[in-house]
Image 1 (cartoon, rainbow, N blue to C red):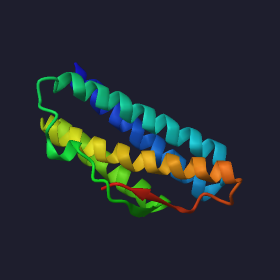
Image 2: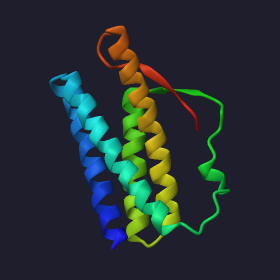
Image 3: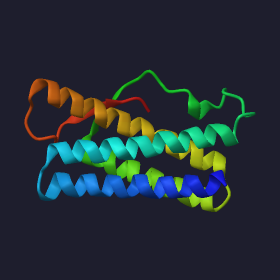
Length: 139
């Protein structure tokens, strides 16, 4: 039951990321862009919640769950492409029955989107120009 919900929500998140990129590149509507990113991020959080239910007994010591404190600069569009790719791989992993791999890929996509949201917030606060900047990411 959770597996079907996960696949459906991963698909929804990918669709919202695709929509947000189209909004950004075709008719530049920053508010619609930010809303699509937010909905995609919400879908990903729901997926991670479902994964936490499935993997309750798993130790929290998995190395991929611990984020590095080093920061890297991430460009907006490549971050989106990477997040989309990670979500597609997560969906494929889930459909293949590898929920641990799907969980890992979903968490990495979420981390990228969190950095994108940070960039959007910085741009909003600074009253900045078009959203084409870079943001830091913890690998």
